[in-house]
Amino acid sequence: MVDLPRGDYGWGLVKLEPLFGPTGHTFLVIDVDTAFTGRVLDIRAESDAPFFVDDEQLSDGDFKRLYYDWDKLREIDPRAQSARTAFNVGPWFGNAGLVKREEFDPWIEWTLPRRLRYPQYFMGGDQGVMNYVILQKEALEGLRIERRTIMCWPGHSMQGLDAESISKRTAPPCIIHWAGMKKTSLRHMAGGDILLHFEKVYYAHLPAGTLRRLLAICQHFLIHWRHWVGVRIRLSYRKWIATSFLGQIV
Image (tube, rainbow, N blue to C red):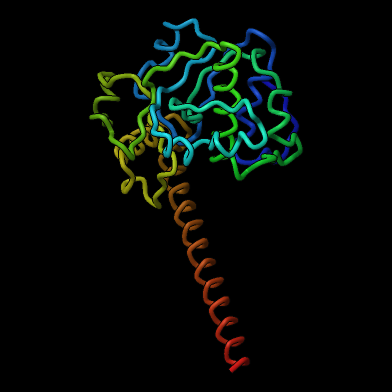
């Protein structure tokens, strides 16, 4: 357990903190919009590499769009290396003490909230800057990273995964990550049957689970409804202001 100060750590940047823990500590960083289909920790145990990540092969264009643009970064860091292999920061395993906080100093302001010094160069909150520092350290200092296909993104394919195979423990082990895929109802999500399965399992282990699940669903839809109404009111107000302003000009 790490005792971090309370506060706003910005978009995903709190996930860097395990890197700076006591040397030798191992850890798994996992986003909340994920689900395990099997014993992924057993796959991790097969490797002694200090960093163990999902293997993602990308074109130059996709890499620059999703992570960072090394050509632009060379304007401020001539050592910036080109790359084709990245890793999604939704799930990754690491060892503390091998990457120092000061290696991120040129790129991050350690205020609360945390801020990227060059948000125009790094995409996705922690994702771009994390990949940059780690991949630079691999290329220039030989940091060992093992890449395996441990993540499934439903936007590409569910790879045959479903709630039945997961509940029967016959599904291949991986981590499903619903990154950037949000719907009002779980039923309308890709892999919605899996999300509903884990929702039911979670509430089944809580006192008065059925009632609490019902209340949570109602609260969820109320929040979405209030947001929808708020957006409509703001858009209508802006349209009214613009129309009134143009009317005065004419």
